[in-house]
Length: 383
Image (cartoon, rainbow, N blue to C red; front, side, top):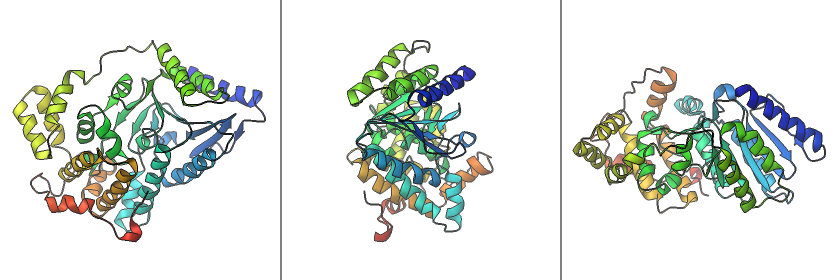
């Protein structure tokens, strides 16, 4: 199937080059980390770091944002598609290892990366043209920011969605404070605190993706989208829905979390992380105790910051959420757990982070308040 998909993609490229010589232009070399193409009235952004699971770095951000701005102001452009190369990942996250290395020595990357990433997230969330993200493969962290705020998000059976930041001393950023509280019930809080992974059709059923299309139909889907003459939102939605209806080779099972949605709504509805812990203990079911065991591995500071972020984010705009999240990101870079989490998970990979403080009781209200406190005026992100 992998070979067939590669051949289909090549066929699609060659067909466009052959049939649309005056409309299809390639504006990047093959070795670039992002590729930009125009096919008729459609702009295509392709993440091109497959060996790094298309992890988003500052170089990519600084290429994608201005191109989206240019296309949005071009009357000839009617649609934007974001996809990726490789078979494993749409975008597995941001290049946070580089961010933490810079943060240790006071480098600018720890400031610039989040600042410019959130500006890009906001552009996608306010984009005037129909925007289709093909989230085929691992989609976490920075990859979520490139997709979830867009008008359309297409999952495949290979999609793996998660926001696992509490396990590395971070928090679900890239606008997580906006989209997670807007998922059904307390599902967003559950996903944010536990880092639970949604796969395939479940990404659609949870409301993270707007459509599901099996992966071997993606080249045909992209061709159908780029063939639209003057696409508007309803035209794009019609094409996506048609391909979703045709994606019958992948079993359509019940949502994996369906048996636990009532528990999630009640147990994760606490006003504090301590209350959620007590709810899980009181429930006592095998499932509840499994969730408790998962939470006990996470950064206590990150969990408290995350819960407040999501509770307050429910009444904030995307822009307000991103402004606040930039403050939190900088506090993470000034504190300890972010560095320790990256060390344990990504550098040494011993999976044994030593959180500071190590318990929920040790995370004071004053510390949580500090994470949300204003930065010096010249450092604030204002969207």
